[in-house]
Each structure stands twice: as structure tokens, then as C-alpha cells.
Image (cartoon, rainbow, N blue to C red):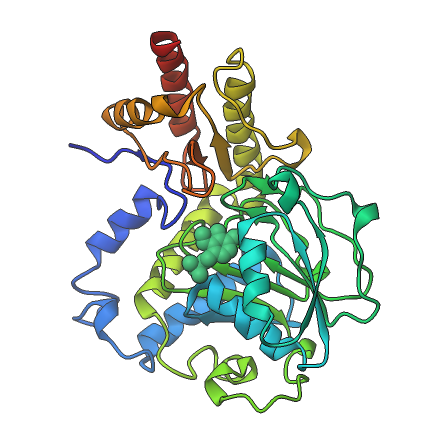
Length: 361
Ligand code: PMP
């Protein structure tokens, strides 16, 4: 058996070169005579590794010194609660734009903490499009505007950055961070769980404009106060050292590939290949998202009937194509084609889909 193409939504495929490097230095890391998992986060070797990872992320994303880059735990879900706590007081309002499941979850986590307003939602439409900007009902004095640039389950992605005036944008980039170029200076906060485009689970990145922190007026437990992580280089308590180290390797790999610009070109190409195969299948395969909002990272698609799902998945696995089962909320299939998925993986999937349609048409 050999490694297959892995279309899992997350935890997701990592570059093979990164896994090989982890394997090669697992027992003895950086002359430490121990694994990276076994040394103190306060030791010089790990401090250097951590700092280099932050430098590489700043370089890859063009993050200025106006922002803190935090390496946290708890996943994007925890950040969906920690951020409202840190950005606003209980009497302030957070605006939420809902374009899928994860925006809804973020809102649920914010509701106990402050006033919230749903500025627009496509829930009734089944989350297949981004509500027209002219329909958004923004609060006059929102402390922040939260949205999900890429909805991992529904496959709905923004291909530009929304304009909400001076209100700080808070964006959950879990499934699209570093998949293309992004002007970080347009955001108040960018946050992302690592387990899709950056590395293993366990690490959550938050890129926070420094002037937004510490103004909430709440009496927070010190561990929930993001300023404490900011002032302590994300080592207010023990960080997820192994995940942090692997993310560092993934960032080196990304730099060697040509960074966000190169990923953008490749991701555009991969998504075009897959959507053309779906749209060109004579109706055999179907993706319901409005073309202008189709995701480059997560492509949900359906077969002519749900009875074909099982044979599709079984035959796909036999052909070396893993993780294609759709999220239970939507059913059908979903191909997640993050940075680590090569063009050849998508070509292989498209070939299989054509062949399957012929045999089961
Ligand atoms: N937001 C988005 C866009 C996601 O895709 C996910 C995970 N699939 C989450 C939030 C939740 O992330 P976590 O499990 O790291 O809390």
C-alpha cells in the first residue's frame, strides 16, 4: 500500500516532503538529542523555531508590525468565543454575515458575550451564494464585523474582501489561509485552525491588529486575555510545540513553492479543473453554489442519486482517492483541495469521475 491522494476537509493532507522531514528528525531534533516534542518550550532551540515560524508567516502574508501573530490552542471554535471577549464589551455589538455553517457556529459562540446582529444570511437559500452587499444591514456602531471567507462545508468563498467601512473585519480563514494573496492590512483579525492549510491540528493562528486588544473593559481570566499571549510570544502557557514545529516546516515548503502567489495560481487551476469536470458532465455531477462564490478549496458535489454515493466512495478509495465523503449536513461528496494537493491529484480525481459516470451512467 502506498500513500493516496487525500481530499479530507481537515485534518487534511500535508506535503509529503514535510512528513519526510518530520520522520527524519523525529528522534533527534536540532542536535538536542531528543525529539522536538520532548524539549522545553522555554529552551533556546524551541524559542528559535517558534520565532522563525512567526517570521516566515509574516513574510508569506505580508504582516506588518501593527499586528500580533499568536500561536494558540483550542481551534477556530475557541477563537470564535475568545475574540468577541477580547474585542468588545458586553454592551457592544458584533455584526455577523452568515454564508454557511461555520459563520453560524461563530455567532452561537459570541451570543453569550455581547450583542450580535446578523447583517445578512443565505440560510434560507441553503447557503449557495453570498448575499448581495446592498442587502447587508450593518449596525452603526459595531465593534467588529465577522465573516467566513471560505465556508468549508458549503463551499462558498469570497473572492474579494468585503468593504464595511471603518469597522474592523474579523475573518475565519481556517480553510483558506495562504491559499492566495490577501491584503492583511484590510483586517482587524485573521484567525485559522492549522489543520487544513498549515499543518496538524492543535495550533490556531490569530493575526490581531494590536490596537484592538485590551479595550474590552471585561474582567477576564488571565488565560483568556489575548494581550497576555501577545506580550508573552504566545507562551503565556505551554503551546502546542509539535504542531508549531510542523507548521514551521509547512511554511518553509510554501516559501520554496513560491508563496501565496504561486498557491493562488495553482489553486485557481485546480478548482477550474474540477468545476469544469462537474459542469461538463452533462448533469451527472452537480455543484449548486453560484459560480461567482464557488470555493477554490472545498468543492461539494452530488451524484444523480444518493444510492450511488457508496459505490463512488468505495471505487474512489480503490483508485487511491481518499476522504471524498461530503459533510453529513449536506450529504453527497466534497473534495478538499488545499495547498498540499497537487494538480496531479485533481487530474486523477477528474479522470476517475469521468470513468465512474460512464460505468454508472
Ligand atoms: N471554521 C471553519 C471555516 C472551519 O472549516 C472549521 C473546521 N472545519 C472550524 C471553524 C472549526 O475549527 P476547529 O475544529 O479547529 O475548532
